[in-house]
Image (cartoon, rainbow over all chains, first blue to last red; front, top):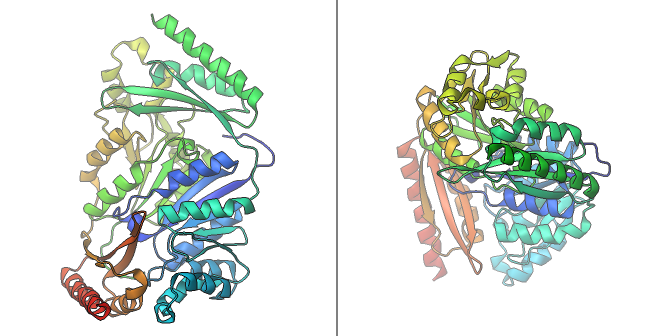
Length: 251
Length: 251
């Protein structure tokens, strides 16, 4: 879909974790982040899920950060040996990494007893040089933003708080407006040709058709999206007219 | 995680669709496919989600099919203008694409009346040269397998039927066994160092620690995975001993 709109702010998301790829844990972050970014005017362009493997993480980080305004990551910032995200980000960016005094101070709020702040927990204070920290109101160990990479926890409640926390630091574009039109029982094949013509006539609007199967039959939604309300309205009128015409022809 | 096991069969998954990236539709296929492939002995190595964009689809198809035994795709094989997967697969593989008589015959089962099998619906019979078809028991329009690429619908019920249908054609590896050990209330930071040592001592087993936050506190599961039952048992004994030791030290 080519749809040239200026001032676009784009993002990619990298989900890090063996447990997602094995199917043991069902990801709940992709859909949440997609909806959140769309709402604040950032276009999520691509998502990748990779395992807890240094080479895979670094390759994905460098591919995705280079071609998007922002790269968000989830997972791999805990205290255990399989949490290697912070070190991989530092390697990918070619910057140093060490215990960050601000992050250590945050951990001390949680682990007041010095012997509780052991070496493993201190790993959560390892932050790449030059990063801004992102507060974690739930378990204190912070996320961080370094260059255009935003590193968040994998636990959904913590990720959501971090996303909220980092939002004021992000540039955002004009939000995309969308309208959804139910096909009113018309099958996709009945309106596909007409809808393709409407799409061609309205290049400033992205039109998609999304079938949902309820176990018995398909319920189809036609979704129109644009940053230009006037163009969106014109396309909506054209789609509504198409559906009305086809339904009356079908009577 | 380096864990050299022979006869590995690997896969990547490519989810195609603007609606996933906008957050409008919450993907239900990644988790299902991950669990299914793990159960039949295929390692899902990476997942990507891309928009309905020819360049993005072709780039991802070629990157992922080259380095995995199989590439599975979901989405974009319906009759509307935004369904461009089949053509993109043909371009990525450098093969022709045309109306496949077998696929046309399948569509005729559903659209008995010749005028119902219009041009848009016939697009669903466009199949890359050399492909095997994958039956669609729900709405007839088939998926297909061409070279090592398996192309399925995005609608979960149809995708699941297609995955079942293609399974007999796939080579599969030895399944990975896994055991899960609850940390019994111990926080990750209390066992992280010891668990790292167990991981180092058991390189044939992949050990991960997965915190779940229930809104009040963390419940941690330590998951061990291996294709070798004996190694898995040894590592399990070591992790259980670690947890028991730490819990009694904590009393």
